[in-house]
Image 1 (spheres, rainbow, N blue to C red):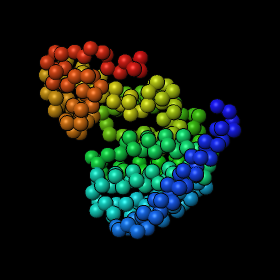
Image 2 (image 1 turned 135 degrees about the horizontal axis):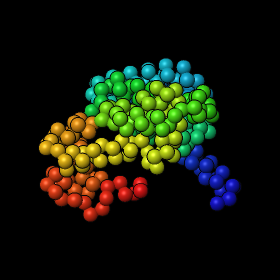
Image 3 (image 1 turned 120 degrees about the vertical axis):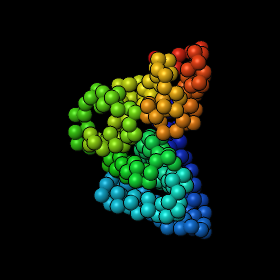
Image 4 (image 1 turned 45 degrees about the vertical axis):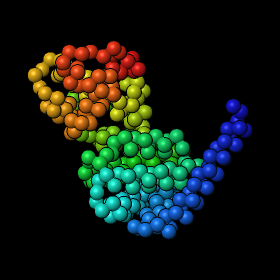
Length: 263
């Protein structure tokens, strides 16, 4: 594909996003439950992020999160749903003003993979603020100071020793003073898979070991490997391993080795 065609496709993509934003604006301005206020906050946040103004963006993000929380009646599931809508709107806005679409899309994916209705609102808020901070870094065109000095192998060792604990990529990035996108890329380069897949691998590998070699029941193993829901654990286990946890405990073995796509 030649350079001219690439430029034309980028222009078409931006035009489509602008059209979608215009339609989004017409809908929210006539919708109930404070949607117009949220749209205004999304726009203000997008503007400050696009300038790389971290301090102002975090202030705007806190206002937006509070508005989403109120709109959701403090219901975690509804909050996550509304936050996803706001992230889509922010992504569309930022990609119309020359912020890197790939970086912003990656950051959105990272955030969406770490939040769920089972987490408390404070956790979701911290993850969202870290996302905003990383977006500012991306739009400003640089990684935070000392990004190249992080010891990725040391971070992996920490993950290996604490994978049953509930910590996110954003929290790790904040502790090491780098953006989530930078840490995500560094870990993927070293591990050959993304952060979430690696945590899942560690947990399922340990679960198979416990199912095979211990007398623990499935509920006990669920919590032992870091999951809070037996239903969710069993769903993940079957998806990854190809058979149910109860079948595995009974001696049945999968036809293909789990995680073979990464080997």
